Image 1: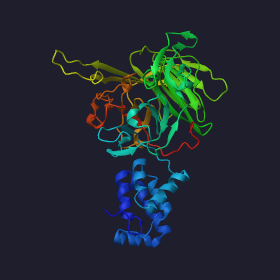
Image 2 (image 1 turned 45 degrees about the vertical axis):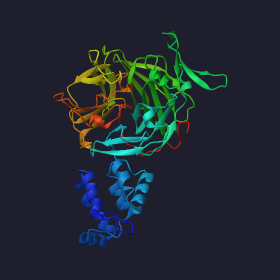
Image 3 (image 1 turned 90 degrees about the vertical axis):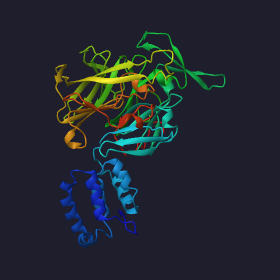
Image 4 (image 1 turned 60 degrees about the horizontal axis):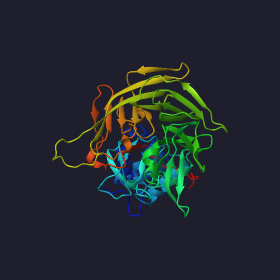
Length: 463
């Protein structure tokens, strides 16, 4: 199919076909588009109708069309020719591109290089290959994803934000600034090991442990989040970390992590109305105002359920309601019997399987949970990324009343296993289907949901 003429200008017919393929509701926009084209450039319509070619489309028309595309298609059309590239850049820089994005599955493949990540588009059911900055993504841990950013830990257990779409990478404050981590230096002043102190508040819960530079990330990090901070127009990064799943955070530009008032056993976080909400493994909810000079922990709800061996998530519906989601994930370890059994990687036999999902609407004023029987016209994304609840009408490629899952029982997502709990669960009949064949991804790092984002963090966190 001919995309551009010899002068680098696109075919109107080809562009419309592209958008028709990518956007099911394009017909609702198409009549308005045709009127706008005819008003701006009357001869363009006659020539396009006769030859299926156009000598030129105005940049603002291109921008109107490009604004309807999701980011994978938008990036693709921006590389077709010079005029498309100019429209793509103008759309991005003008702030006019605000289209909601369908989450994608980010993973690595054995068939690709160590710096290459695969992005599986749920809306297109196709894979894009992305080259990420050093250090290689295959050598890192992925401990979270939100706002289009992936939070990774390198081989020195240092944290980085990476935007797979833009290639931007930002170093977060050093791991040595986390309250319970102390560096151990050699005689030349070079860090050789880390000491992880085991205390909660003023209570020591165990003896300190010593870890190699690349081993601390196994013991320290649980989950990470990137939240937009409307008060500053920037970002806040929140960590759930050990000992016993405490909280620390860093604002854009901070040189160290700030330890939140002592509490523990957190499973998930959301940020709304200027407050950080965190849910514990026993279904308690705490709130923290991160904007003031002194941060105080406010107990919103005391422990409501005894879900110690399961996993809890918080998600905000488009209406503003808050959901708590209980996910029962069964872990089995298979062993071959007999002396002739082949030797295996001990992690390869670890299998996690989601058996049950229960949903609750949170009434914070009444301090109660109301069980609900399904998502109806909504969709959930759960895993080692930020939990999302989306309206199915705004995302026609997604399945209403379904939960899109990746691994996230504490520890499982950080194990090097090819047996992953990844797929889509129907809440109506509890059936399960795969998204991508397990043969597509490497055992490390674990696949994770990411919502593509073209925004650059120009101010940076310790850039």
